[in-house]
Amino acid sequence: MMKKTRGVSQLIATVALIAVTLSAMFVYVQGLNQYSAGETGLLSGAFRINSMKNYERVSIVYLFKNSTGLYILAYNYGEVDAAISRLIINSNPVENGTYSPINIPAKSLSLIAVTHGSYTGQIQVSIITARGNVIFQTGVL
Amino acid sequence: MAVHRKLCHRNPHRGRSLGVSNVLGAILFVFAIIVLTSLIAVVTNELSAYVSSVDYMNAMERDRSFEQLSLTPVVSNSYIVSNITNVGSVPVNITQFVVLNKATNSSVIYQKNLFLNPGQILFNYNMSFITPSNATVLLVTSKGNSFLILVQGGAIWH
View: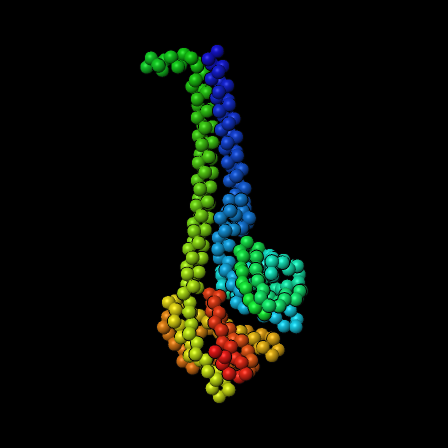
């Protein structure tokens, strides 16, 4: 009776050990597989996406308008390129495609042209980047 | 000794079973150790990179807040000349001059590379590239700060 009990226990323990090891190896292989996958890796992504977010620094230098639209002078003083995910003016999202460029290369000044809408007086501009940074600026046109 | 005999008596196949179990267990244990060590190494490496990025962000934003320039622009021989003084506590690199022509509402960006240490003065910097008589001139630094000169009717507006 005692022998049977010990045998089953060993079997369960072995199966459990194999299951745990295989699970850990699966995670390991997945993690290493996606380690070089940039900001979306299983293990690295959680930290790397926030690291890249910190390295992305954008400031709105100036706002002006003319007959062709509103212009936003934005400077990327960070280490990585910034991509604009959403532009919000006076609390209203600006439709994608009505402003360009979308990408602001690192260490460069970009003139973002907004060709849709008419803006006068005091305006509030928010740039939301693809990494989730928000840059806010107010100005008077 | 008595205990040993008792255990052997209970499990007549003890020697064989334990041998297989030990080898299997050892292999699985080694696998598990390798996996866990690798995981810890990867996560630690990424965490270290994240901490570095936080340090970078804090240093950048701190230096950015300490950047300060003093401009004393005057019109001389129809050109704007200005003393540019770094009155902040960190070095300043002026990377762009942006000239916004108020008459045409157009803008021109001039790439520059003026480096000023704290307290350093750039005497009579000639801004002959500023030709419009009504313009907003922005001196943009490498840390994203901007400093303004307003030209109104060919004169400096204060």
